[in-house]
Image (cartoon, rainbow, N blue to C red):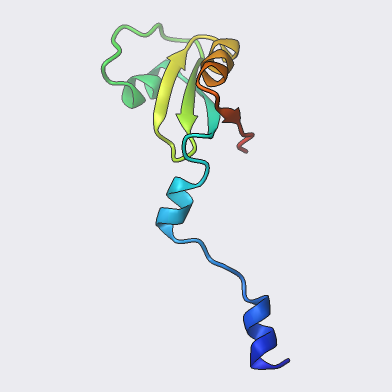
Amino acid sequence: MTEADKTLHARHVMTEHELATLGGGVVAYIKTLTADEASRMFPAIEGLPKGINLFSLHAADGTPLALTDTRQAAIGHAIDDDLEIASVH
């Protein structure tokens, strides 16, 4: 393999900045949280009921956008904001 072939086949490695801005303003994901996790992520919200799951909508870079009590409400927030929901595993 020549040097030119190696250059053509080199993989592009994303920088941290490129990764952080990937999908910005277009892609979001939904995360299931316990009340304790939600309290840490959304400290301004007080009195969250214990023992239930909550659902947070996040921008592609991880920025929390909304906290809801149902997955359907989180999906509704994403649709209202014209965001594509990505599956995250």
